[in-house]
Image 1 (cartoon, rainbow, N blue to C red):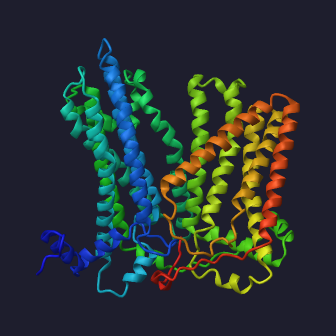
Image 2 (cartoon, one colour):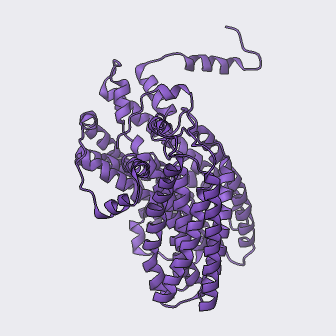
Image 3 (cartoon, rainbow, N blue to C red):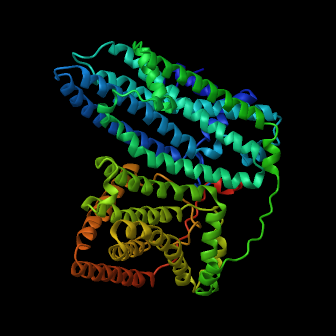
Length: 583
C-alpha cells in the first residue's frame, strides 16, 4: 500500500476501509445516515449540505456575538455589592441554554418528521435485498439516534464551555462543575424532547389506519412546527427573567425545562430539596420517553410495511361552490395551471411543510409583538388603544403577507417531480400569458385574499370598525404591490423546474428578509398607523399606495409581453431515479 502525497497514511487507510462494502447492518446504517436530509424536491443527492454549511457558519458567527454580550453582562454583575443578582442571572441564562436546546432539537425532529420511521421508498428500494425487516428498523433507529446525537452535541457543547467562561468573577463558585452540568442537563433535555416526539409519531402510526394517519400526521407536524416557531420569542426572553428566579412556584414541577435546570444545579453542588426533586423528575422523564420511543419502534416494525404498502383510493369530493365560482372566471388553460398548483399542494407533503414554515415564522413575529405588549403592561394593555398596539395590529397583516408570498414564491420553484414540465412544454406555444395569469390568480385567491380576510377581525377588534377597515385596505394595497414584485421576474409554471438549494448564500437570504421586515413591516406599518389618526392622511396614503400598485402592475404586464417560459431541467443522474410521493 502506497501513501498518497500530502495525505496521512492513517487517514488514507480509513478512507479505503470506508469505500469497501461491509456487513448489511453497517451498509444500511450508512445509507440512512448519509441520506438523512436528502429530499425529492432537489435533483442532486447531498445538495442540502451546502445549506447546512451556511447555517453552521451563521450559528458560529452569532455565537461570537453572544459570548461578547455575556462577557460584558457578567463583568457588570461581578461588580455589584451582593452576589444575589449574579446568582439569579446565572439561573436564568442556564435555563435559557437548556430551553434553547429543547427547541432546537424539537425543530430538527419536526422537520424530519417523516424520516423518523422507514418510509415507503425505503421498503421499495430494499425489498429485493436479502435483509430482514428487523435489520431495516434497527438500522433506521440507530442511524436516527446517531444523527440526533451529533446534532445535540453540536448545539450544547459550545454553550456549556463558553457560558461558564464568561461567568468567571468574584461571585463564581464551583464554576468548573458548571461545564459538565450545563452540557449534561441541556443534552438530557434535548434527548427528552427527541424521544417524546418519536413516541408521538409512533403512537399515531400504530393507532391510526393508513388514510387518517396521513392527514393527522401532517396536521401534527404543522401544529408542532408553528408552536415551536411561535415559542422562540418566549425562549429568547428567558435571560430577562432574573427577578423572577427567586420564586419557587409549585407549577415548576410540571415544566420540563425546570426539571433539567434542577439537573444542572444538582451536578453543580446545589443540595436544596427542590432542586433535587426537579432533577429526579428529569431523569424519570428521560427514561420514560426513551422506553416509550423504543416500544413504539418495536410495536410498529411488524405492521409498518403492510400499512405503507396498502393501496389508497382517493375518495371523490364534490366540488364546492366557491371553487366552481373561481373556475367559472377562468378559461380552460388558466384552469389547468390553477388546478395543477392546487392539487400539487394538496398531494405533496414537503411543499405544504415549506409553506407552513413560512407562515409559522410570520405568526411567531405577530405573537412576539403582542406578547411583548401584554407583558409590558402586565396583561392589561389590550383594553387601551396605545400607539404600540395600533402598530402591532397594522403590522400583523403586513408580516403575514410578506412571509406567505415569500413562501409561495420559493415553493413554486420546488419541483413536484423533474418530468412535470413535459405537458406544459407541449402546450406552451401561444399560451404563455394565460399560464402566467393563472399563477397570478392563484396568489390572489389563495394568498392575498385569505390574509386580508383572516386579519380583518383582529384589526376591527383592536382599532374599531372604521379604522380597522381602513387599516385592512391600506395593508391590502402593499400586499398587491408585493405580489406584483414577486411575479416581476417569475416566468415559470410552478413545480415544473428542477431546483438546487444553496445557490444563494444563506446569510444573503437572511439579510434580504431582515431588510424586508424593517422596511415593509416596521416602517410601512408605522406609517399606516400614524396616518390612521386623521381621515385626510388616510385618504392620501391610500391614493399613494394605489398609485404605486398600479404603476408596478403596469410595468410587470409590459415586461410579461416578452420572453419565454423557463423550464430548467437538470441532466443529473438523479433525474432517472424513481420518485414516489406518498403522505
